[in-house]
Image (cartoon, rainbow, N blue to C red; front, side):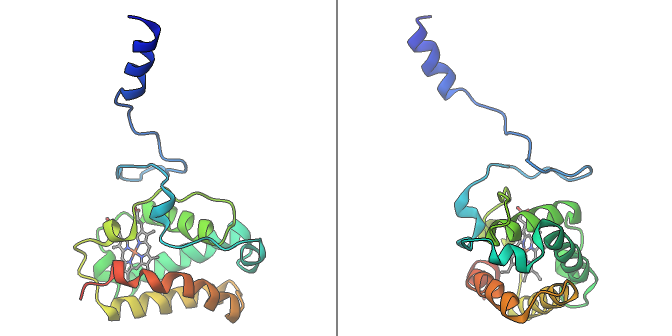
Length: 164
Ligand code: HEM
């Protein structure tokens, strides 16, 4: 086969999905793992002030662990989260928060509409989830002004998450 044809054939070849960048052992596979900036759901902050306010990736890990643990244990949000992959959630929510806070990560999860499709999420679930996030951020000692700046990035995603 001439080289040019070979190059074109290779270009259009089906490529297997790349391994997720930070997949955790025991995580269920959800395809695709491609990093698409549009999936993040918000524009990232500029500069490093917000990353510092959240105590860098270590602080964001602690916040996400507390946030996810609370959401699973909570009587309002718990039934929505039950039977979902907590290992993957901790990874993808960490990636999303870290990317929005401009703390040096890429988000490899689904867009917010696809991730929450058919979950039957109501406004009361959303309110409680925000309270659980506030509690996790307060545990980490994040200032109220930084908490509110971050929450204002998440608020516009409501329309993709809550079913009316
Ligand atoms: C702005 C608010 C929210 C944000 C930023 C958010 C973020 C995320 C992210 C990043 C994922 C992972 C997507 C992936 O792994 O591909 C996810 C999945 C999920 N979220 Fe949310 N979420 C929000 C609101 C909610 C609410 C209010 C609930 C219910 C109380 C909820 C329940 C879930 C569940 C159950 C999953 C797992 C879906 C699955 O396993 O297929 N989320 N969310």
